[in-house]
Image (cartoon, rainbow, N blue to C red):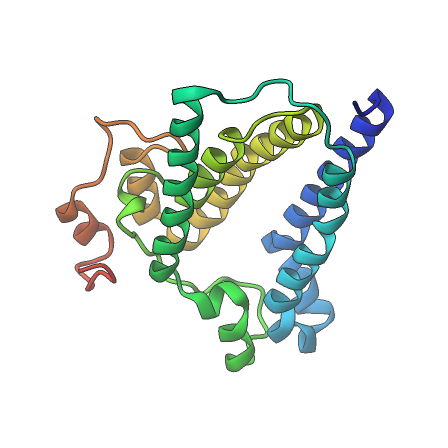
Length: 219
């Protein structure tokens, strides 16, 4: 069983990771580098992703080192339900990747264009999952996190990651509002953020209205 000091170290490592991730993802950071170091900007997104992958290794390593007996473990029918939800979340991740601009997400589009400003040029996209939640990857991530058996280290990690996803979704929405204005404001009013609700979803006709009758990538 990990000590309080070890769990505190794990928590601090996660918090520092997410703080740096949020700072580097912010428009302010991008504009700072665009002003001070313009030649870096075509590489910014690519470097951001590389840094994110490298810096997540320490908290994941601590999570592995501090593994112990579970505080709770899914049993019987609940275990089957947890595994089914986990599998559905993984399938949802893989399926939904086809509706994102992978070149923009990875940073290859910015590199090919030689983009030197600090703005985000990705178009507003509404995939099938986006009709039911505004942040489907975050929602699927929460399913993957909380369907796990929980030991103390996993519980600390799951709690901090959940808090970050909630806060991060709000930071991302502030950026999306600045980029897409009234279209995203209407979308946000119609669709819940992380937890789907049967009575709140976007009809296909509304998708067409929001996107200005552009062809949808999922038609």
